[in-house]
Length: 377
Image (cartoon, rainbow, N blue to C red):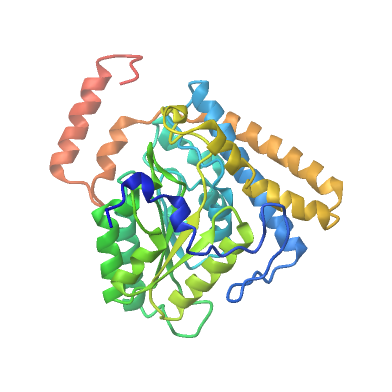
C-alpha cells in the first residue's frame, strides 16, 4: 500500500474518533454515556450570557484595532464555547495558563475586559494580577505555557494541595494551546513531565483547524487527542462548539487532576471564524464554503436555539443585548483612557529588588529624558 499524502489524511479520517456532544448544532440536548451536564436552564442562560459577552469583547477589540486604537488583536470568534465551557469548570483555587487568544477564559476568571487591552495597545506588560484571578498573563511564545502549567501543577503536589479530599483546598491547573502549538517540542516535553510526575494538569487544545495558514491535515495524521496515549495518559475529543459538552468534560478532567489522578488531554474541535490576528487574511488559504459550513455549528446560535425552544422570556435577550452594548462602550472609553507608560518604571520591574547598576541606568535615562521638555520618550 502506498503512503498517504498529507492532503489524503484529513479531518474526515479524524472523525472516526467520536466527539463528546451534549447539545447539537440545532440546539437539541443529547446524552453521552460518560459525560453529563447537570445544570438547569438557569445555568445554561448564565453560560449563554458568557458566550454573548465574550464574543462582544472580541468584536469590540477587533473594531478598536481597525480604528488604530490598539496595534494587534487575535480574534477568538467561533471559539467561545471552548473557552467559556472550560473556564466555568474551574474553581477559584485552580490556575489557568493561556495564550493570547483566551479572552473568554479571562472573562470567566474575572478579568476586566478593559484590562485586556493594555498589552495590545503597547502601554503595559500585562494588565491584571495573575494571583488575584488565577489566570496567567498572555503567553506569546507558542507552547511555552504548557511547561509553565506543568511546573505549577508539580508545585501544587509538593504543597499538599492535591488529593486531600478537601474541595476548598484541592487544586489543579489547565493549560490552553492551539493545534499549531501541539507540534512544538515544548508541548511534548510538558506531556512527558506531567505524565512522569503525575501532575494535576489538564492540557486543553483548541483545535481551530488552522495553525495560522496551515490546515490540520498538514499538521497531524491522527487526532490530537490520541497523542497523549504515547505519554501514558488519557485524551478526549469534545465538540468545541458545544458549551455544555466542553463544561462537562473539563469538569471531569479537572476533578480527576484535583483528586490526584494525574493529567488529561482535551481536544476541543472548533473553528476560528475570523483571522489568526488582525494582520492575517484568511481568504488567502481557506475557502468561503468551508467557513459557511462551520457557521452552521456556531456555538452561540445553538444555545440560543435551545433557550428559545425552552421558552426563555424575550426580555432576557433584550437585557443581554443592552448589557453587551454597555460593555462595548465601556471598553472603548477604557481604551482611550489608558495612560502612556512611564518608561523609567521599567527599570523597577526587572528584579524584585533594584540593583545598583539598574539604578544608575534609570537615573541616566531620566536625566536624558529631562533634556527634552514635552517629549514622549
